[in-house]
Length: 436
Image 1 (tube, rainbow, N blue to C red):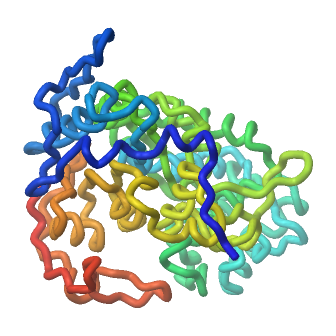
Image 2: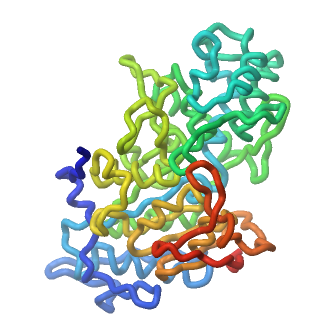
């Protein structure tokens, strides 16, 4: 029987008591009027966020900090509210997993799988994809040895790997993955850490740091050569998100990152916004006794290590947050927890973030990248806790057509599209894009 257990060190992270904040008309209202309240015998100053936000988003975020921060007279010293951010395209522009994958290909750091059998790299890889990879890469290196994908002779192998990773299809357009639960894993995302087999976490952090240096130094809109094609070659931190994270930390929030990029990669990047590696939850590999990554992934909830079916993706993000942040173990980690054991704030940009955003009890920040289910829920705003902000760098233009919330905005476990439902099972009507 699965049970829900709270670690002793998790008590500090439980949310501020309900008396601290009233939720009225979708707006956080502090119980005390003073943002800079002082406890007897001590002076307390609430961090103030910088400008650069859309509409009243800065004010809404500031109200969150005022109401739940350490200066609130209604928050006890032991309560530490939790804030959770997605990473790629939420805290940074572009994708650090992609940046690392391109670096691995350019520098020949992906290993030939055991016996040249590519199905050992993912339980979801199709035979068509395994055959295409074997034909493109099979004679270039011995099993376990790095493939020379950064050399002229390895261009075809690099192109096939990049196609399977980036498009979930082979170069000949055959589906590369099949049979996965669309609410707990994305095989192409999971494939990147699985391709890191044979390296240690320390070595991968070194690879990620090298890719980070290149992508931060490259000009905006820079491209890089990967195999015979070009790919995005730059990444930038969002100043507004960096300021928000810093403000939340100064106000006494427990800030975490939850990402569907590999754990060591996000650890490297998260340091740039002051988040310690211990507060990063990425896709996590199992390891050998010597500390080398295997092609299998750690499990969560009812999923055992090595089963490769539950990563930090949609419902999987809920599970991993419940497990790592709140100490919930077993199948209970896959379930919605009581309000006192959930994050008060969450930020994301994609349908992959929907579940952990919905779990946030006070405020949910959405960076608008025109993702159907997420924008349906954010614009519907049925409980008044959603705020939407355009992308901070190169924001998207207004989506011309309405979001298809009432018909195909939701993706089921088997990949079948359907209507987006509210918590009471009513259908969300199609929504117009208004924040861009």
